[in-house]
Image (cartoon, rainbow, N blue to C red; front, side, top):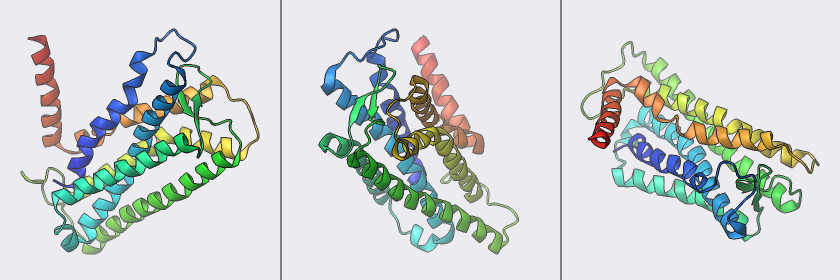
Length: 258
């Protein structure tokens, strides 16, 4: 199984992390009901899902670069290695999520009153250095991802492949399909997590001590919505994947109906 297959399984976990905590909060409530401990747990869990989503996608792009441009090396990588990479991505995301619990930045009730997240209004050195370190590390990861996609494109042009090989029973996607899937992933991630990045930059660069409820709600909803869109590029790119994915969904619904 390649990293694309591992990612498909990880997306299910990321989606579940995006929606589970909210189910316990009454929709008409405008204040946090679960105390300080609940706030810290909610902030950690939701931030873990967001950091995992923004970590897996660049790594998928790097995997595609290896598959296209370093195929001899790529063919030596086993499925267990990809599972190890997936676990390392989760550990990296978990590191950023738990650091606020130990004093590097902090979680607090958001202005909406019904969720907890990074305390954007905290202007001390802890918050500023945390945001700076996160931006630098993720910038490096994203540059590597876009470089990998660019080199994959250069490779396909250099070999002058006129027709992409057809997918087979083992590989459901051609190399070019995977390239477009990776590009779509990066687009979804940038659109979904862009508002959150803007909010983070605003909090680090301004001295404002207030923020509107809408400015907090929109980035959070965009992050959660974007995580649910990751299967779409696979569905659009491959007839076989589309049939398998939709067939599973239909059979599941029929099973419930019966």
